[in-house]
Length: 540
Image 1: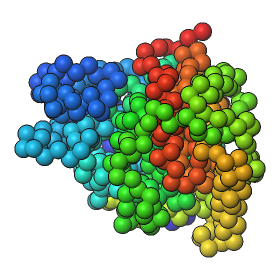
Image 2: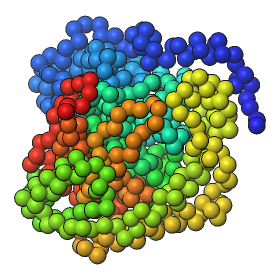
Image 3: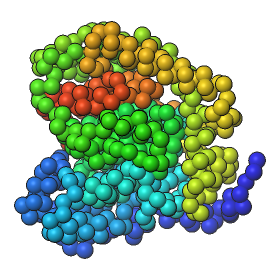
């Protein structure tokens, strides 16, 4: 096994370096930006702020980006370590960015609805600043990107204040089949803000917990299969997994180039649509965005109609039910609401290929992960202690007391055995995935039943954090849209013992406008979301 000389560093200096990670509380206090004056947001209460209310407060002079950013920093300092452990690193430039935003506003330059709005992003998204991009791994701690990801660049162009980065399931939950979602060696365990003994779900667990806990106005996660919609559902959020190619993926630590995408996570459909508008568009470093030409909308909020469900034909993907009786009951109630709002319900409307492409999905992802990660690591900065998957596996083995303390790296090891993307096994798996998920899956049932979208429980309520047995299966409907590369939106639908459950709307490629309308109509009629109370356990 080829190993680089820096892997032979002794344990003592490595331990010293890791002690400085921002999730060591003392270091966090030293390195996070510290408000220099009263950290209130003026007359603006932090809980459940919307982007529209933030902009109104800025325009009226009741608050400023500096004041609001200070207030969010203060809330994170006060609550995060004590509760959800969601923020892996604060941006030391956050207050300067907020001040620059305020100066622009005073000069009459307002970039759009995100101008001066504090957001958090997942720690697998490159930022060319003083923050690391690590995917939660100690092997990348201190690695600074030379160039902003497409996501970070678009947020900056829209005027958003990148407040910091959020914890995640290490390597976006693609390291072991027995992982604990929300855990990384760098960040520790993120917890669910509704019940702190519960898992926030992964892998965008930190973004889900942080947005739900009102640590920012909105956030960005990433998904390969379920990692935006699942934590959104479990944390009482709206999550959008867009069509692959709608948002550029350059500068995002990859798993699968056919399934990966970033996606908005917010407390309302409107806020998620505002964030989607800012993120969507061409990325010269991501060929997948070429397919989005002609499909990118200038403003996704224009499709938010309270009567969008009237006359809509929705198919109930009934085979996604049955894992959680509580979640099923919530969704049955939601279906009744959809009917009262004028939707025509087709029940059942199951995918003809339901359950037929799980193995091929795993096979293709193993190939694509090895190929994509090796390319990413090869271009990582000098602080990255590994440059290949081979070296990463060796690093984790050498530092097993920290990296492998909770679970192993069997997925890494399986991926390492795969060959190039030219191999027939990969080509066959990919062909099967796309055929069964698209033409013989989502598109087939939509056409057969003349449907606008499919609906199902996003997943069950959050499971307990269990480092002995790993994650419990709570069901989920994410795989079909994920494998197809099609859009999927989840919206809060109800609670099971105080734990949120979301309803999913998913459909064919580039159907985000229609799905957003449906989700918004349901949200406005129900107003399900309630702010979390950081309870020790679920309510019984």
